[in-house]
Image (cartoon, rainbow, N blue to C red):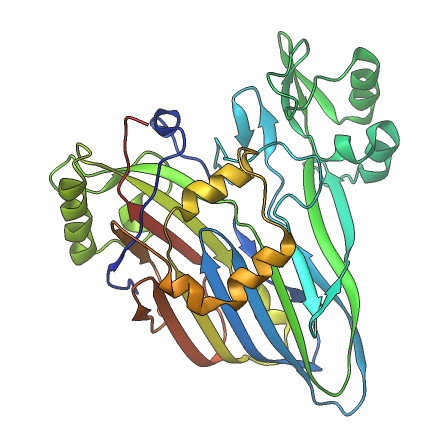
Amino acid sequence: MPIKPFLIHTAFVLLGGHALANDSSSELAVGGIVLVKNNAITMQREDLFLSLSGVHVRYEMRNDTGKPVTLRVAFPLPEIPTWTPAGLDSRAGGHNIAITPWRSSNFIDFRVSVNGEGVQPETEIRAILPDGTDLTAALREIGGEDLLLRPGLFEADYVPQTDREPRALDARTRAKLKKLGALTEEGGPLYRLAWQTNVTFHWVQTFPQGVTIVEHTYRPIIGSQFIDTSTSNEIRGSGHPDPETGYCIDGQTKRAIRKMAKDESVHGYLSGHTLSYILQTARNWKGPIETFHLTLQGGKGEASETLGKNTGRIDPAPTEMIMDLFENRAAIIGRAHEGKQILSLCTDLPIRKTGPLRFEATVKDYIPKEDLNILFVEGSDLNQ
């Protein structure tokens, strides 16, 4: 069911204001750690911390079997968006994704630790054609990891505008790919590299008897759109999904958004930022999550800072600083803030406000039935 609107004191500077006027940038939904299906490891507790600047998850995994249990632990990344002449596009339909084309498979800066010690996971990259054919080995031989990470639509004579954009392939490489069925001609100078790239981090973990603490952090790929309050009865967005139905904007939330638009004097338009998290990957653990604790955190400038890091305008913070950010929660609550932010999502979790920037929910014996999709609405300056 929808939760009531929350007014969070914060401020935001829209990144490239008019660039998002006609469309939205898509968020990429990410979930938590996945175990192979087992009847040995119980999720004693999961603490999930979500914000526009970062995600932190802490798991207490309990082994009650009386002997060590060794399992493979996996963290599947969101889909690798495909390159198009207009930018980046996702298979789920989201486009204009605000992220720089990647030079590394770890494009969300994923970090993991076990009992406080950092773990260097293995990386599996798979390139799969629509008919299910696995081209990973063949593509790696032709062009290495860089080729695996660059599916999409290209112009044969395309000249990159920045050093971050993928270059068009030479004729010899295109011929090899066409022979494999990995390249299709799209008419004129266009060709499509037709595979879907999937990346998974994984490692073998031995769980001794008792509790093992596993933690991970990553930087989210958030979505951005304009929220339009100019019509009399609807709250509309410049992209998908529709804000009212996609994020359960009820009457009270709608009134709060309209009041914000009037106060911000932005001609009926506000900024909307979206964050998604996949909860349903938790079904491989033994039984339900005994204690599930969710924290939603707002904060000044978080959306603009994250967008800046994802697009290469701002250098990402060192891993140690990211970990300190989540551990020093008191500092997050107490930092300076101004303006307003409204949060809306569809959920049956018993969320309550616990601070000017914070909302929390705790559930016992939790079995996730739906994922989290959160909308943050805040004032914007269309002149930027």
